[in-house]
Length: 205
Image 1 (tube, one colour):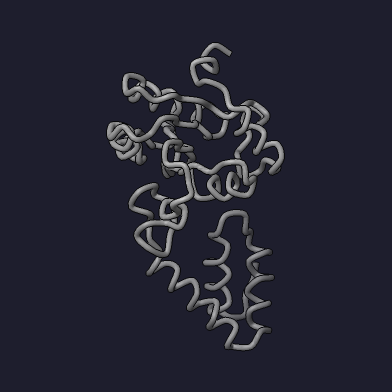
Image 2: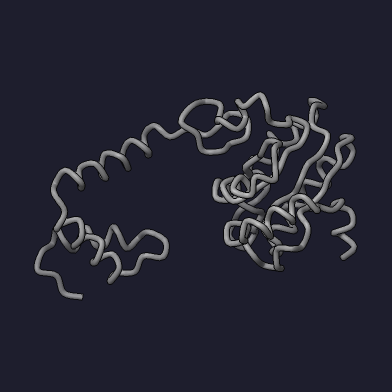
């Protein structure tokens, strides 16, 4: 792809680094920004810079937040005895959209994946275990995607907490094997949470 401007080329190259954005799509987006008023580009730049510099992670669940304690953890009406374990913010948004879960979350920040160099210590598993050791949590719901990495992560956490007097369950397999939570429709995901099964049974399937 030939560019008449180095400035344009640099902008396209940077935009194409985003997931799912190829060079042609990046060019289309950059040209759109060029056609817009300078103010709109400035607003976009400022919003991205402010997000990057001021965004926080909830000190309790590790969800993305504007403040130290996210709105979900700070909500007194949430059930603090149930924690839904998810991979990242996208899964929190997916589960919340079902309106079927009123407990709290714990965001791991990924899944155990040796091939990608991600081990248990790269995730927030230790803080989850510490939470459960305090004795306030009655049930842990595993809501990771049903992939090999997701199942490995579930089992690792299960082994770490199996003697801590907490019920462990997993979302029902309304979610197809290998599917990511964020792509499941709200009804299916909602039913999978409502009809969750004991984790021990999932080990036998």
